Length: 420
Image (cartoon, rainbow, N blue to C red; front, side):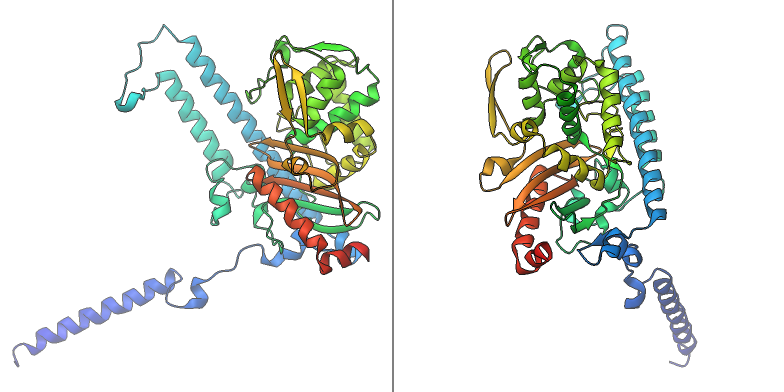
């Protein structure tokens, strides 16, 4: 035993050193102590700037100009990256089509998959590198750590890429941007990221309708859908076929009610202003309404360069609600049109189809950069209320958000805020 004593001593020394090293490593990685392992979310210091519920007028109006400028810079950078990505995708598609018949047939893999051609491989590599550099390797990157965010992890919208969905939200709404206004008093009832400048998708068509009506072109004039009206931006489908002839009024209803892109484009193309002049008139109207953070580049909303804020859109909704035809067309439940065969078009806002909402004006929107959007003027407790929801991850999510807002306004707390 005396001979083994030195050996036991060495073993104990090695074990002691290993344990000490483990403790040190645990402390370095944040483990071992609860106050090191748990770290607060980066938004806690500015929670009040992201979200306000009623409060004093000063609190409602108060927001950080520095944060707004930062958000605008982030969005501009992301939009530039997305547009460059679209250019790469188009180049890849053109390269593939131009080399059909000139390159050897691609090899068939197990399950019917095919190896891409050399040109397609190069384009995909460029696209992947661009996507990572513009969206994932900067301060705009955002970890998707919630079940709701995981649904969008493979295709981030601008708001999600800039982290707007992590803003504090007592109603736990899915939309990244929320603004609820009492229309009569102009009072803000609920607000989240209302000053963020983001793509607005087909919410654009509200302004398109306003310009169509103000231009004064006859709503009975027949307009033919041509190849010029086919979507080359997002390559979206449409039931309004090329060669279809409808009146300007029918196209206006299809654009507002069913968000038909070809209808909206034809309205602008056949305007007495011409397509370029029509878009210029949209921007002029936005400036006249005080929509200082709004910019339009096309009449459909397919372009991610059509941007605005919830505050600006609330102005547009208020003015659109004063137009009888916009109210009528945007809230119609369905419409039968010959395109060329007789088909039924339905309203994209399922709240209108539900029948238990009193909605004065409505418009939905979606492109991947904008997420699911909804703006409307609705009567809650008999009072006209503007609701703006931008960037929900699904159509049902924006509908659920609207229902949750309505239930909250109908509670004693929400009703007190509305009527005070």
